[in-house]
Amino acid sequence: MNREVSTYLDASRLCAAIFVVAGHVEWSFAPGFMPFIRSGHLATLAVGVFFVLSGFVIGLTVDQKEKSARNYFVSRAARIYSVVIPALILTWMLDVAAEAFKLDGYSSPSMAVVGREFAKDIVSLTFINASWGWYLTPGNNVPFWSLGFEVPYYIVFGLCFFGGVISRLVAMLFLLVIGPNVALLFILWLVGLACYHASKHILLSQLQGRLVFIFSILLLCLSPFAAHFFSENAPFEKGFSCLFQFFLSGIPFAGTIIGFQFSGLSFGRLSRPITWAAGSTFAIYLFHFPVAYFLKSIVPKDWPLSIRWVGIFSAAILISIVLAIFTERKKHSWRMGILKLLQFVPGGFYGMARQGRSERQGRITQ
Image 1 (cartoon, helix red, strand yellow):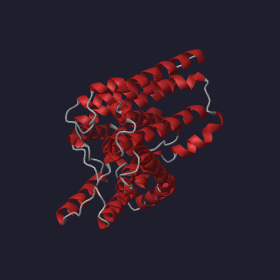
Image 2 (cartoon, one colour):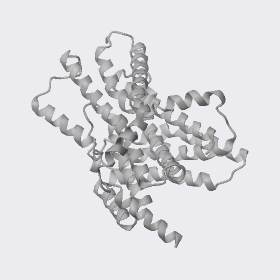
Image 3 (cartoon, one colour):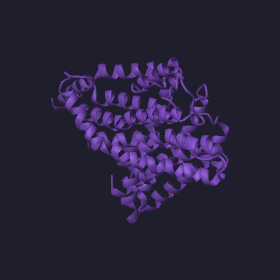
Image 4 (cartoon, rainbow, N blue to C red):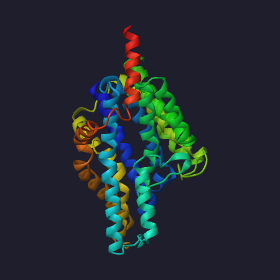
């Protein structure tokens, strides 16, 4: 994959994160300033882009970087927990601070509520929080729901790709156990994976690439209009129907990746700042909601709507970028820490996958 395609993926990830933040600000914290963001379900559609991006990047990762089950699972754990654990701590700290100062939107919890919230945090660390439409979120950190989809996809794919028959059966059983909602959007994740492999084998001229890119962008731009036919409460609405709107943005976005690869388009000097900013997208995604929730409580309600909207939006993103310096951008340190811990674990979770992968490679060499 060349540098320009990598930058395009970074730019897409950054834009999707910004749309998620804007959607939550418009929905929950300063509604009415940009109503088209909510009416077009832009935050929901941005998550569809994230699912495709995730599948594409995993395909690239196991193809070019992580050749063993150990490296794959350790890298995924480091990426996830380097942000998830700090995000849970931040959510808890802001809740405690707001309750201490009796800010609007927060209430003094009873011991029963404290116990329930602690249990939710523990469950959230296992990423089964979206099983069978459960959609459990720790505290007020609503965006956490999507990790109950993405992390199981990492596990299922890792077991299938690196594993033998037993680990693949375990992966399929796991996918059944976590429920049909998670399984449905796995199809969209696989679209991203298929997009990566297709991009390696498809050959287009520059003109064809630009036509595919433009056509896919047009479909992507039309997705907010099609989203009107679905519930705006996705994925929290009961049933499957609301989940299909994630495909409205995900599939056209996959087309833009293939088209851009052959388009000859370039970001020029913007490549470096885009790549740097994209290194904070996961932190922006998980930190912005509790930060914005807290900011909403301290920003005076008599301020003009535009100032409140822009202020909460900008501050939530900037604070998340600062926090990323100590979390997401330190994932390599987390990886080293996890590797040290694994020295004391015989075999471990990835043992079946590693053994199955070795058996497959042995059969090939024979």
